[in-house]
Amino acid sequence: MKKIALLTLLLITSYTFANNSNTTTNANSIQIIRLDYNAPNGASRELVLAFTSDNAATDGVDYGYDAAVYSPFTNDLNWLIDSNRYVIQGVGQFQNTSQYLFGLYNEVSGEASITLSSLENFDTDINVYIYDALLDTYTNINDTPFTGIIDAGDYTDRFYIAFEEPEILDIDTNNEDIIIDSFNALGNNENPPKPDNNATTKSINLSYDANTNQLNLKFENNAIVKNITVYNYKGIALKTIEKANNNKINIPLKTNDKNLILHITTDTEVIVKQIALNSN
Image 1 (cartoon, one colour):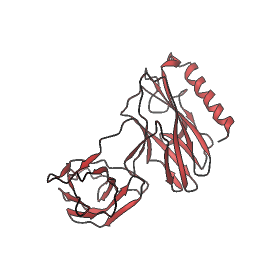
Image 2 (spheres, rainbow, N blue to C red):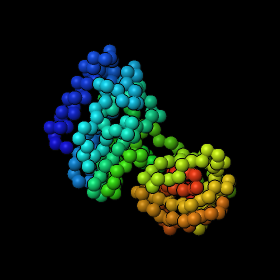
Image 3 (tube, one colour):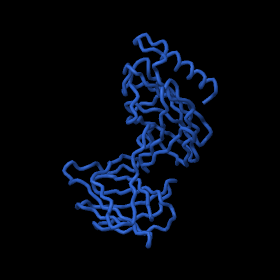
Image 4 (cartoon, rainbow, N blue to C red):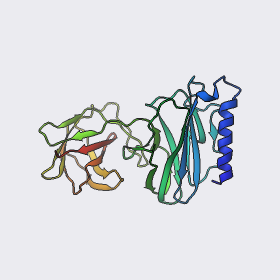
């Protein structure tokens, strides 16, 4: 995107939120997050996310608060609202539990980055993360940009902006397994099967044997496990097991990485969990 277009976006943002005739919201009560995106082909885009303290805007489309993309680029990052692309998104009051979806579009593969350029009108510091729903990773971008090698394609349900990071499971070598009673079923570009509302509650025991560098899984229900993949935080697949139709599964790991992502596909859902292996 050319510099003049970026300048125009900045001016439009300031004008929109300071002069909207449909609301009495004071401009100083608008909290703004500005992001810069750099695509693998060198294209750039600025995005704006604005919070209205009086909930004058919503998570949906709001006239005067959202700016749509009228001429989509083939290499771009946008907000997705009702499956449509936007460069400015106005929402309600800031909540650190909220997440907002990106649409990321690349016609070539390569390194892409998302940088936090500014936070405006926040009384206290907030954390800003890029959430990767495929790998279930949260990358803090307050001081360091999110960077990654992104394959060519359209990503419309993978990347989000988020403001808090959930706790990572800490798995050690004691005799007590870590038990998880529920998982998130995530959509991604692999088109996983839809959850079965009649399926039994998913439960799994996780343990780690530091002597053999082996991750042990035990499923407490009769779910059919189609495959299991272990990734590191760079998104590199370390181990994949296909058609693991057994409620007890042992996964040997040939890696020194201790922070991993467990990606399980069953007959009803896709399960993603961050885990931290502790051999102390």
